[in-house]
Amino acid sequence: MKKKIVAINTTIMLGLSSILAVPGVDAQSIQDMKEKKEAIQEKRSGVESGIHNAEQTIKKLQGQQESLEDQISHIENEISDSEAKIKEKDIQIKETEAEIEKLKEEIAILIERIEKRNELLKERAVSFQESGGDVSYLEVLLGSSSFSDFVGRVNAVATIVEADREILEQHEADKKELEESQNAVEQKMADLQNMLAELKQMQAGLTKQKQQKDALMAKLEAEEEHTHDLKMGLQEESENLTAQASAIQKAIELEQSRRAELEAARKRAAAEARSGSGGGGESVSAAPKISSGAFTNPSAGRLTSPMGPRGGRQHAGIDIAKAGAVPIVSAADGVVMRAYFSQSYGNCVMITHSINGQQYTTLYAHLRSMNVSNGQVVAKGQKIGIMGNTGASRGQHLHFEIHKGSWNVSKSNAVNPLNYVSY
Image (tube, rainbow, N blue to C red):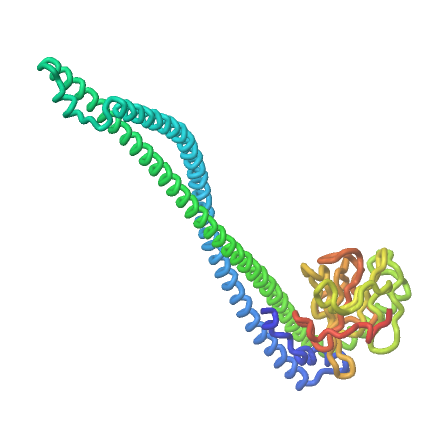
């Protein structure tokens, strides 16, 4: 989305910087600058609209995250509930396994009973064969010698028949009980195993849903962070546009007095270079010698990081490091577009220059202190601050950028400073 940020038009500051190149400002030049100021204000209106859209997007993303948090919480509750049910089924399965072990003991007893009855029935059959082979109970009754003998034989046969019947009935009952007990326990175990499998399948599905929701939450959080970055970039661009409009207005107001102000700035720069002081009584190291040509080195020190890829991102300038109170100077004649504090740049000064009809913007970041303010005319070599370690910085150094045209958030106009200054 950052690619959608509208870059500050290179021509916007030409009207401002043109006053550095001519002794006076004619009516047409003033009209041109007014038109450029109106263009900046119109562009700022578009940026403000972008900020509003970013805020709405952030609110929408936050609402989606809140809804997603509720869904994740519901899924987590369902997972906890399924875990409790799984534990419950595990306990029931263990109890059923204990029942099965107990049933095995009962089955062993039933089997022993059945085997004993089988032996008894075998003995009865053998006894019957030895006493008459295939003699029937009817023949036993008809063989009685008297009525009393008949009655006795009837009672004996009835007793034998009843005993045999009871043995067979108990035998069948034990077999049936054995089969029913086995079937009941096996069915119970099968039902528990099925329920456990269903619970585990449901838990796996819930876990997968939670992973998907977590991934979506991470995506929404990343989008929100990205939108916050976009909003911050738009806000910074809006502030820069405001600063440029103010600088143009300042340029219009300066008119003829500008040349005198620039001359005074040059004298101050020369005096600071001679005295080696910051003009405020602070003892500082020597400022870099003002070189010939359009640009001069902005600071003494050694090059610690060139322009180019660094840490997966584009390093849009160079880093110059030196210990102590090191003065930072304007690399060329110009007007301070902005002197402010940035979360990333720390104390930062941006200066607009017009050199041979070409607009340039120089940037000086991580300053300990700043000696200039918005709209101030500065001369090449004039002290604008002290090297520091403010903002997103790891150790005292100057981060220095040159942009051929205006500065923008995407830094598309950045050029290699080492093509203009030497370290």
